[in-house]
Length: 139
Image 1 (spheres, rainbow, N blue to C red):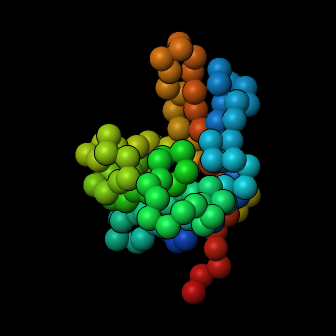
Image 2: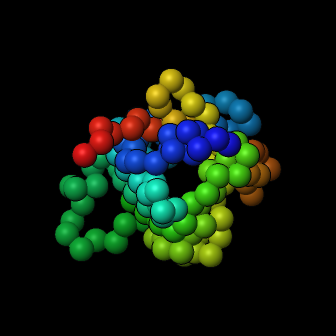
Image 3: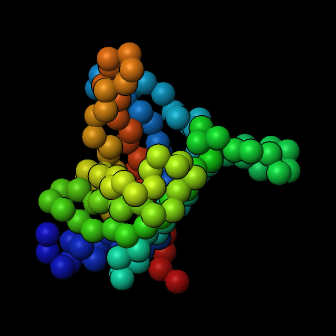
């Protein structure tokens, strides 16, 4: 990957769409269709991501939030081939801490589609998530 391609991911991104596929076909909106999210990649190799349902604000104060309602994580990032890799050291999902989350990068004009690799669920079906991000204007 060239320096220009590497630098093209740096910045702050706003989530436009997140949906999942089951066996290659549309399956669901994991946090409903109007999900909100932000993804930040810094030039020094740190990243953070936050996703939440649009109705999250309406939940009772101090209520617990499951990963189906709100999730966030952060760590170091790097690019390996067509993938951006997130070495997770902070997460609201304990099982992600200490792991590397790989996302295939697909550029759609100026937007960035991040796709998880298919994972086989307990039911034997293959699932993947597609998250479409739009760059926010620079400060």
